[in-house]
Image (cartoon, rainbow over the protein chains, first blue to last red):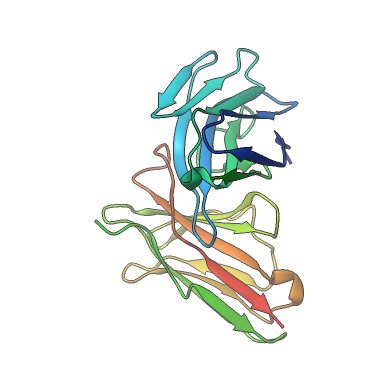
Length: 115
Length: 113
């Protein structure tokens, strides 16, 4: 199956710092999505990217769809304690046969924010 | 405006027992998906259903696992004769159509002892 390499695996930062995490694949993706999962909860969609080069913001979050279509990054500016959680990248590989529901997920980045 | 509802939140079963996980999609959504998350892993697709139809079960183990989405009532993921390796969080998602974003429930955490 498709592999998404997400890095870093975990991050420990101070409140107020900016955060950057990324996701890469050896395959081309049609869509990149970023989800956040709080402990004991399901993933919540943060940002969806549909075109190569696309840069999209959602409040303090910014994500970009890499021009090679094989990577994406997520930035969080001025982190706050409630940003704590696991951030997953996910996407639809180009050879998924048009199955837009069959998401491939990375293993996640665990973010800890120290107040 | 209720989201995707899953129950139970936690389920403990002994090896060999059956596990039944239920999912009610968001109001107005008729497309349901089941994903499994092993510890420290990302979610992996299992099955996609519409009312009374299994559309894609390519991610579901061929044995012991089954899923349904009846005309009335919630979608059910059924695991027969559970083994320790079935311990995981099982997430249900729903969408308006197969091209719309997936909305996930809070999952059922299955522990097999």
